[in-house]
Image (tube, rainbow, N blue to C red; front, side, top):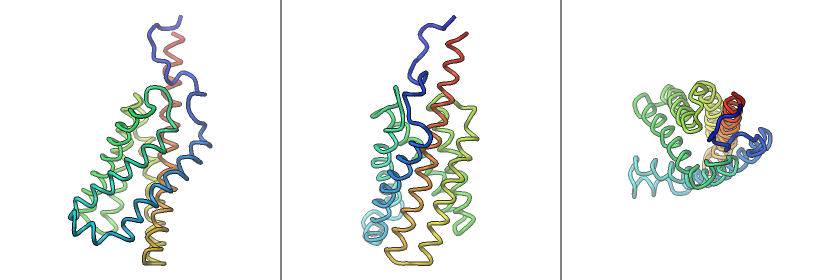
Length: 206
């Protein structure tokens, strides 16, 4: 007999995008977002450091990712997490990611700091998404997806930047990073919603 008062936000899989469509929309959309953010690095990095300082510049870049990225990824969620509430969840998740990444990088620097930053940031972001969608048991799985996507995008983009150099190299870095991380974020949102839908359907049939 179905339970009463069970939220129906995630009960119907048709309420949210398929995995393939999510990857397409999120990957390409977040690629454009990342290009916009990295463009400020390519053409205004020195000015931002002078006007905002090192920490202020990083905060500004994180804010741009949240502001622009939330709108793109928000189209992939259904029910109560649709805009504007999704902005709160994504903002908290990306802020946690940024704190983990920047902290590790500032402490260890160079390659080790970058890898540890990717790992710490992905764990924290995955935890926030898992808690937000009520699927905490999937934290490690979601974090693993984010770590792989983030690391491929970041280090492949970095290699392209080092090879090409200049503003073009920076834009290539931004495009690759955004495409990969956007795909990872899209997959995480899809899996979190699918898991939540399955859990609610199980409760409904008790």
